[in-house]
Length: 592
Ligand code: GLY
Image (cartoon, rainbow, N blue to C red; front, side, top):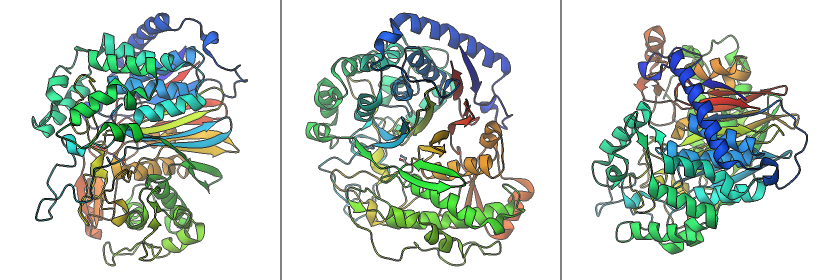
């Protein structure tokens, strides 16, 4: 049995694209039930026999997921029915999205997984890495200018993928089911197909235009049409090989051969790059805030540090925020000043921790942030004084994304964000493998001071070097209260990721909104560059009097297509409350 909420069910969107009529919602539920029954019958033989260890006593009323599409929710439901835990479900969701949500779900990209298992926090970095032959200036022409689009489209944009290794490591360490079982739903969707929704056709058309025929994208995806069944036989074979031979097959077996062949003469990735790829278990960044323990992403993400900086500075600025209404002009102005400081630090100090000693502790230190917040006032003129990084000019020492949240009834949680970077990544499909490769190389700084696709610069700490991981903003986060999971949250959105999570957390905890309202509230974004610019989203535009007030203050307003697709689960007592962002097509489902 399950209880389900769909994105868009709680709030009326201003965009027709986001509306979900009730009848369609029920049709979805019915289809979900039918499909779930079918799939369960097809592969779950003996749930108890599959579990490696005896089940501990449940701590929650049920398990739950908040995931970007309904097929992923169905996959998680099968896994829980088979006795799997949160990590088993997360791995099944991840592989399923690689089939049914191919613009961001992936096996050709990378990401981060924050885990809370048996009362302990963990963080798995399966971010992509630059190939060994990558060079600092590989995207510059002979005049030293960045070659437009080269880090975004085509073979040279691709970094060594980490997703399969990440899922393999996570499931090996924490999963209860057999590896084959967690891949079964994805293999079934790839083999039998799934029904394409209009939004996916739109995303495919957008990406195809963007790739402009420079890759083999259309040969694989032109049949992705609304209402049609989309089958991916080559991807089914790839997933079947990975299921039979284990996660290293992708790096050492036939799949590795296919990737190397695809790259040969066009891109940089070799079989040695694949052989050498390893996911890394790192210490998550943790901080106390508002009576909670935050567990979030460390470098090479900038997101965990950025999120904690925003939350702590806002708490320091309590007197300034007193009586200031949510999303009013003075509210946006105060937050924008905080964001200037966060992005100035990001640009100067954040990079791959295996190349630089990133000063995480200093950057989230209470005294540092209290001082950093000091200059923020309601009367500050935007852009009047340049915002500099707060730890001085010294360099640290050398050292289209999607998110899902899962809790199991034993109180374990997974917060996972992974990415191809742009929608459908580089547009390069591995011939014979049937999967898209990322364009994560664009997350490096191609040239000093040149902004990437998210408009951020990132300084010398994020230049291209062999084997280095590009700086990310992905922020899979778990909040604990008294050692128990209280919130699991994350979103796609590049540099908008941690500012979006910050706003939703503020809505939940400072403004006491119910989850659905916290998600549907207006969101805005500001970062250091371009100066004095507030980004707004079509879903809840900044217009009318609010727009006039911000312009009068000196801000420029910029619309952007998208401001996140937050998938979160709040736990109230013992009841998980999943909620999917109404900006997307996600599903929150409670699973008994
Ligand atoms: N590719 C987006 C990020 O990692 O932040």
